[in-house]
Amino acid sequence: MVENRPWLTALAHLVLIAGVVVVAFPVYVALIASTRGAFDFMSGVVPLLPGPHAAENYLTMLNSGISTSGAPPLAPMMLNSLVMALVIASGKIAISILSAFAIVYFRFPFRQAAFWMIFVTLMLPVEVRILPTFKVVADLGMLNSYAGLTVPLIASATATFLFRQFFLTVPDELMEAARVDGAGPMKFFRDILLPLSRTNMAALFVILFIYGWNQYLWPLLVTTDTGYYTIVMGIKRMADVADAYPQWNVVMAAAVLAMLPPVVVVVAMQKLFVKGLVETEK
Image 1 (cartoon, helix red, strand yellow):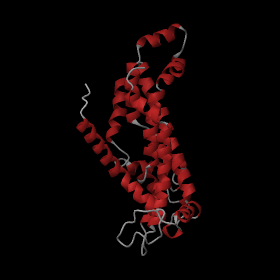
Image 2 (image 1 turned 180 degrees about the horizontal axis):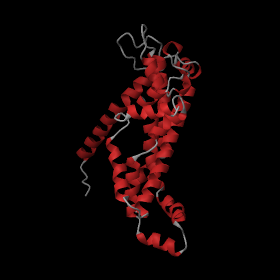
Image 3 (image 1 turned 120 degrees about the vertical axis):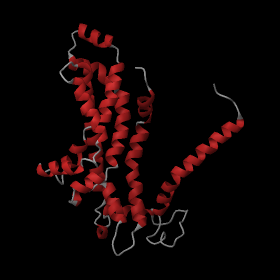
Image 4 (image 1 turned 60 degrees about the vertical axis):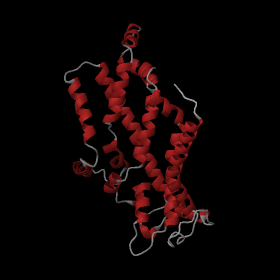
């Protein structure tokens, strides 16, 4: 039941506006800082209006970076982050949907044990198993490579669990009908399950893309070659300078540019993302 009370509507709008202001204000400050000079934010007074150095700051980051901070130009770092995010998101979805398909539709010994072993890994994030994972990656010669950046993060127990729960809601009659029509397991998977899972895959892709894009600790460990730096590493290096003041104007320009790809992905897949999270009936 929806009650038509004007004061409740006004209160709801006030809460929403307050939430938007709290979330958007740091982004606005970063945007303003990216248009200012190098020392405009050192006086202790935060400017709230744009400055005249926007083009200069953004071109500096895109073309040359900050050599004194060990940060290469922004474009290669954004490319590395894009490759990392795409491979991690696509790989997690591919591995998870196949493992969930095997767990739900195939009968083999220790099937449930296999699922619970996958599920238990939810309690072991990268930070917990980072030393043995680094040892394995180093022994395989995968340091300073895209494989080293992505392969250790490419499996997901969460995605496997979500796909399993969705497959359990698919009526058995669909599988029986496909079997009567002569469809094998992979044809059933390709022609029926994959189309039905489209919105789930889209929602997971958005979440996993942002997860891969924001990775910091693992790239910091496995890369020493500046050619494999990611954008998050680059921003951290630019902010941590010794014997000098951080150039917050270009740091904020890099941060603003780093926000664009995740925003584009979320906006472009907004409808599928919402449907994948709320849709319960296929």
